[in-house]
Amino acid sequence: MPVATHLPRSAVGWIALALALLSGCAHRRAAPAEPLPPRVTPEQAQRLLPPDVKDRAGWAEDVLAALDAHKQYPSVEAVCAVFAVIEQESGFQANPPVPGLSRIVRQRLDAYAEKLGPLGPPALSALLGGQAPGQSRSFAQRLEAVRTERDLDRIFRELLEYYDTEFPVTYAAARVASSLFKSTRLEDLNPITTAGSMQVSVRFSEELAGDDERARLRVREELYTRGGGVYYGTARLLGYEAHYDQPLYRFADYNGGVYTSRNAALQEQVTALTGIDLVQDGDLLAYDKQGEPVDTDSNSLKALLAFRARHAPDLSERRVRKDAREEKTLAFEETDTWSAIKSAYQRVTGKAPAYAKLPTVVIRSPKLSGDRSTAWFAQSVNKRYQRCLGRAAPPAPK
Image (cartoon, rainbow, N blue to C red; front, side):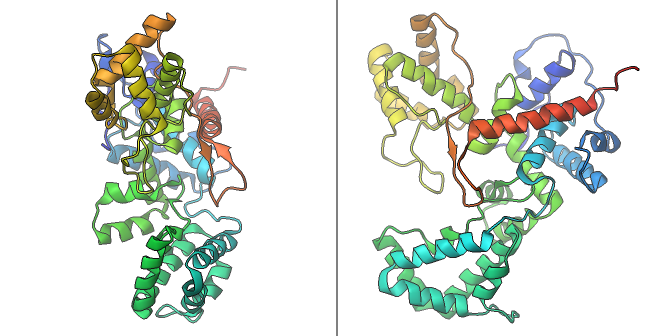
């Protein structure tokens, strides 16, 4: 995923510029170039923050630095988009506390141990009774007192290292048992998969920084700093090109994955053309826990093949399968499959096919008290974004 979006060469006022910066669609316009609006200064960025935010200068400077690092023009709209996600995800806390965090991770460890049969509980008890070098308390005691994501992340990394060092035979046996019982790996039980002030994906951040072990460890620490969390979160939010006509859809993508909103609209159109009811989750393929496509055909891929047979027989099955592999890229919009679906929808329904829609994705996380949805997330962030834009407007004359 690229971390930079080319600056627009034209804009029609502030609103047009906002859409260009947040959607990457400016290259489609051929209007004469107009001057960009003034860059947001650190002082102006502070005024865009919610009134109760502490260390306003620090947050403003870090957001502007992140935009600059990722070659994003620091417009009011871009600054407000980042601020809105921070406000939604952490309330402007670099290392946010998680209620009940100790209970969450202990339940996950206990469930894992039970799945491993007789080997599991004794191994877990021995593991949690150990102490990391330089620590006076056991892992179990430290877990009981953990409050923040960073603290849990550090304990978990030390725990895995201790297990590998002190119990190498048990560790190897647990790996085999995990495979035999199709259980989660011990490494996967760390509930911290999103982190920092913007709750950005840890996997995305590690991939952005590099794939060597030192880079991954560095990222884990950087995410819990104000500057690091904003740096990786800004790349995740704005660092790819899409043709959205409003930032609401980019906010949904931040939660559901790149191009989730675009692909959800395509799924809706395929349903209309085939009668096959699809969950509009933005995934045309099936993926494993590491985000890699699997060989099993998803319901959406089956529907694409049914569409081909009914509406586009000139498309080969091989072409459809190859095109679907591009679903997480902008290039998907240049494929034969994309064009065939959009054309058929226009022809059959007489309506212009939508580019995007809010996806149907349920959010489940041990850090949440209940289920939420990606649509709920996007709408909540958008409300904060609109309030931020309101703070940029000059005061009304008395």
